[in-house]
Image (cartoon, rainbow, N blue to C red; front, side, top):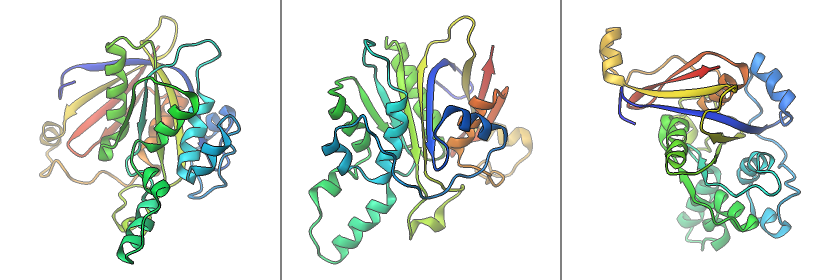
Length: 263
């Protein structure tokens, strides 16, 4: 997808989301009508469908991410599909803890290190389900959600019948919190993405060059900060989908994005 060029088109076949006090679909639909920032911390999801040995190893963020992924899983008898796991920052709390251990000349736990890499959460799910489908894990700054959709639509174009997209975030840990440019909370959501189907709502995502947009607006600096957000961008995208809004615009780090709902 080039700037100002191609438009991605997709449908959301199924969805699930998890945050403190928000698990049921009705809760999330009510939230989309009156959105608020969920709590930054929460009790870990139970994940009863996961093998206990793997579940015990997961950190809180991993449990939150997989709570949505398991709730949005394919039904019995359906083929496994590729998955894209996307988080802008990942588990910075675990990172800070390991850096502190290194600074104190302490050995790192192999388990802690293994679960700190960006693809670890998705890999644990693959191991638990013996799922050998394509798994991607990505981070793309303020463009993370849009880049994940681009990856998912690319897999659809390569012939995948559906793609599971899992997005998850947690507040930045000290000392990184000072660099946060959006509100932080603990949440995840999962979409099962497929090609648009007749009679169902579908969505498009297009990319416009940020510099051109800034010139049209008369701005001096195309990287100028956007207005303060009420929610993390990932939750704004989820709210857009649930509320049935016609359009959502987002200024990324190098480009601006436009989401549209159709049907």
